[in-house]
Every structure is written in C-alpha cells, then in structure tokens.
Amino acid sequence: MGFALVVSDGHEIHRVRDRDYKETPQRLRSILKGIEGMTVWDRLAPQTFPEQHILDVHDAKFFKFMTDVLECLEPDEELLPSVIPIRNQTRLPSDLALQAPYYSIDTFTPITRNAYVTARKSVDCALTAAQAVLDGTRAAYALVRPPGHHAEHRYFGGYCYFNSLAVAANYLSKHGKVAVFDLDYHHGNGQQQIFYERNDVLTMSVHGHPNVAFPYFSGFEDEDGAGVGEGFNLNVPLPEGVDGQAYRQALVKLVRRAEEFTPAFIVVALGLDTAKNDPAGTWLLQARDFRQNGQIIGSLRLPTLVVQEGGYNLRTLGINARHFFEGLWEAQQAAG
Ligand code: SP5
Ligand code: ZN
Image (tube, rainbow, N blue to C red):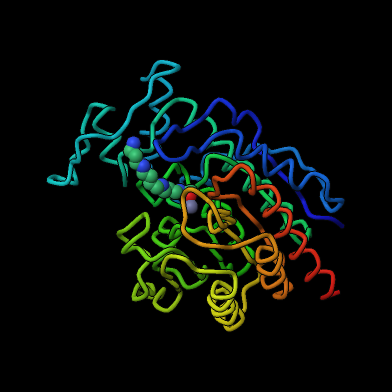
C-alpha cells in the first residue's frame, strides 16, 4: 500500500498578499510538482465532513463569526484586523469589522469569504487523510492551504483560520493516543493551546525562538501543559541560523519524548519554512536534511498523518517536500 495524498481543491480563490512574502496558490503547485513524480502516492478525493468536527476544537461563537462572513461580506471584500479590543474581552463587538480583531492574534491575516471556504476545505482534506490513516494506510499527506497551526480554540492568525491538523488529531484521538510534531519554522501555538490540558494528545514543536520569531507570545520552553496535560507539551525554541545537524538534535529529543508517550498515531505539521533561503525563516535546512527528518519520523514506525503548513520559497518547496517523503517512506519500508 502507498501513501495517501489529499490535495486542497479550489484553493486558488484565496491568496494573502503581504509585504515580504505571500501565502499564495503557487506554493501548493510547487509542492505538487515536486512530489507528483513519486510512485508512492494513492490520490484520494477530499470528502466532506460535518462541521461538528471543527466545533470539537473551536469555539462556537468563533465559528459563527467565520461563517457570518459569507453573508456579511461582498465576494471580494477583505477585513483586516485594526482596532485591538483588549479592554473588555467578554463583550463580543456586534460589527463584523470589529469581530475580526476580537478573534485575531495579528493584524495581517485577512478575513474574506474565500478564506472561509478554503479553510473549510483544508479541514476536510486533513480529515480525509486522517480517515485513510484509520483505514490502515501507513502515511497520508493533506497538501492544503490555507495552513492551520496558528489557529487556536477561538483565534485565527498567522495566515491560519481553522486548525485543520488539530481537528484531525482530535478525530484520531478517539481511536488512540496522538503525538503531534510541529516542524514549521513558527511555533505551533494553535494545537498547543487546543490540547494544553489533555494527556491523550502530546503536542511538540521545534521553532524559531519567540523572542525573535512569530508568533512571539508563545513557544517558550517552560510551557509544558496544565492540569492532567502537564508534561504533555514540549517546546524546543532555537536561535536563528540553525542548520540541519542542530535541527536533528532537537527533532531527536521530540522523538524520544514520543517513544516514552507510546502514541498510536503521529501527526506532523509539515512547515517547509525551515529551509535555507525561505523568506519567512532564518534557518539553513537543505533537501538532504528534509530527507533525514523524514527518516527520523519514519523510524517511529507508526501510522502518520502529515498536514502541510508554511513554507514560502517557491523554488525549493517541491524538492524539500519530496525529500521529506522519500525519507519517511524509506524508514517505514526498512521497518518492514
Ligand atoms: C503558517 C505560517 O508559516 N505562518 C507564518 C506567519 C508569520 N508571518 C510573519 C509576519 C509577517 C508580517 N508582515 C507584516 C506586514 C504588514 N503588512
Ligand atoms: Zn511557518
């Protein structure tokens, strides 16, 4: 059996223009171009799942705000958060333009009808891939945009709207313990916050130190979970300029923690912005490093769901994704 591949359809209607780099349809096309020559893939069409799966990890009013966008905005209208309502956090502003900052962690993630529609589809792709894993495939890749790992229980931001990987991890968790590896350059604050008080989903992240990297307010080493979830969140913040070898040292720490946890499933937030020359990062990973990262995760020999997150260098996204999956495949085959 091969690896399942589920690709966002209709994502081209959504794009985020930012000054330095962009979360655009070309990103997904570059990745697809890089991996489609591999013979391992069994392509699966995205299935539609009930919205209850989203409500299992996101706040109901937050979800309503996202869906209200369909009725309240013009097709091409864009809301960017501006006023920051920090004073009265329990009073939901009635105006949608003020609800945007109320539910946002930043001021550069636009709210549009297309963002909502495509974010819903990203969730469906992640759930379709999760279902493939439950059905016995060794690995499934949800190649999606928009990304999701910065979206918390009731916040969007960092180009993310719904936390697709958290929705999928929560779905898998009904069948066994889940260990989440966030490999994106930016801290996976979304799933950290969503699972912070749970001990059946271990959340882990290697990322640029929040002193110098988005999202700035979380990803510190001393955040290790709360309540029964204490000890079930692991952050490894690293300085700028990290190379493949230093990265692997951190990744191996996560693997050791995962082995101790004895999960039934692995979920990987595959950010490719750790690559050399990525405009969003400062690290130096090359294709061969992504292959080794795939091998390290594959050495766990567990059913694995991979969800695409960031990565913005159109010239290297495809080759790096390909190397990651070649490594994952090799290690899983070697395991027999
Ligand atoms: C999924 C992912 O990789 N999200 C990364 C978001 C980090 N973006 C960094 C901040 C860009 C700030 N640009 C502000 C320009 C104002 N127009
Ligand atoms: Zn990122």
